[in-house]
Image 1 (cartoon, one colour):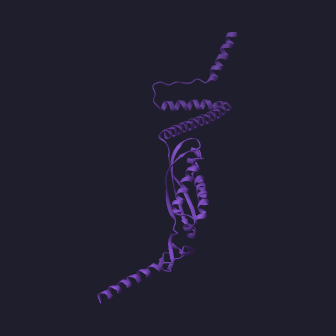
Image 2 (cartoon, helix red, strand yellow; image 1 turned 120 degrees about the vertical axis):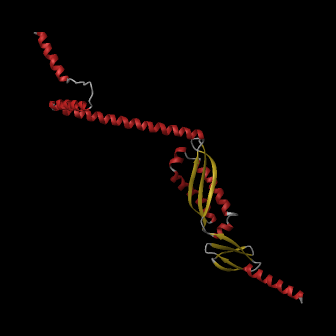
Image 3 (cartoon, helix red, strand yellow; image 1 turned 180 degrees about the horizontal axis):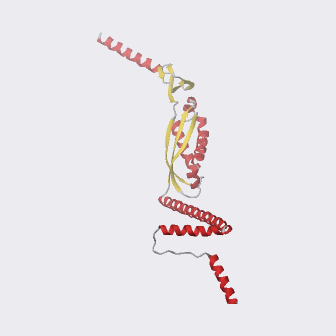
Length: 256
């Protein structure tokens, strides 16, 4: 009797194991690629999947977007500057059958393609373009990687260059260049201000020349401003016209 009881329990356990082996439940974002005696049947799911025990084999495939952080790559730019660049790649499986049948490991293959493409594309860029045209480079990387992974049923949606680490000497050189550029702009702005001020002074001189009394009024205004400062010494400027008239008068007297 005990032997029969043990046999029954064993048969029940085997039956449960067989039941769970050919009944699978797939989530909404999962697909099951079915192989029957080694031949591809196709992708099924989501929901309840029934397999033939010992004949059908199923491989689960996740269709959600995968975020892959590309390790820092040593890149030599077109102008022979050595930098370290890392990026992030967003991709997902669009064809579960191709992702399992066309490549051994689609995640590993995509990661390797991303690393080699990153080094290749950035190696064709100059450092200034790499720092300034980040968006354009991202689009180019996405296009190239997506073209290579498309036969595997992989869609690369976004590629973003995250960090560009420069050598210390290059960082110092760029800082000096930026400082020199700021100094140049400061001098240009100062020169433009001087030019505009001189133009305004020339306009004022023409206005005063057209109205001689304006010079006398300006002279009196200046005296008022100086007197308000309560200085002990006052300097009275003498108009050039007065000196010229005085010189002409003295020359006439001398000639007589």
